[in-house]
Length: 330
Image (cartoon, rainbow, N blue to C red; front, side):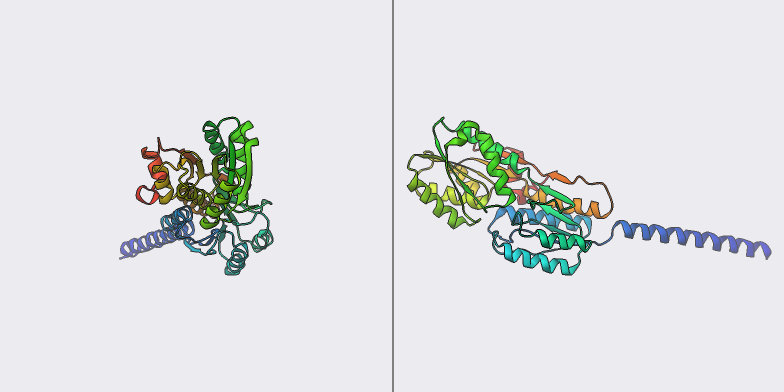
């Protein structure tokens, strides 16, 4: 009887110890897989723009894989800084575990972002950033390098005295500043042939109209460079509709299904593609790592590739041109 009681006591101790061990293990797993609540504010939620659609898809996929919730809220138009700041103020009041944003302005959101940091909310920049380094982490294309790649390829298409125009997206935004600088560096001495730089405010129609005006103003124009999807595609449409494909060369940054068609038609000579899906995916993935206390690099380059009519259908470039068919973020 005594031995039976002793065995039962030992069994009870073992069960209690096992329960404690499993409880601690479960608690540890829960802490490692905490359901973080995040907010992401892109420059725009525009389903006609493949760059933002692809980037947001990358954010959503990473959120699903890492088991976190993310609320995505953005303006209808990329240049609507006021609306983005309204959404930013709302997001701060929500007190998320981290705030991810693609700032539309180089300076006009800094006060709000500082408020977020003061409230203990980590700030992550995706795609673009502000003048002051308020962020804890940035995941973006090296825009200086992307612009340089575009300029280097464009230089091969031109003579020493060829006249050039640039259609940029939003004046003063970090991506525009760096891409233009990189483009000029890539052109080298030919950068002196840039006749004019115009800004389309990330609107296809305005890019189209500005390009038509440039063609009238500079009849000897030989190349137009667009520095994002809106500016590139708008300019290419104008060249196609004017029947000038081939005579006026077009190079650009970013891609869409329409841009692919325009390249097939001989309008685009070169596109420098950002890895938008990868950028969004890494943006959320690295944010989760940071929240878990793991080491992350403060500045992460998501990369870019030069695509031409000659290499557009290689397997690697197809992943970038058709990201939703081929998971081109890897």
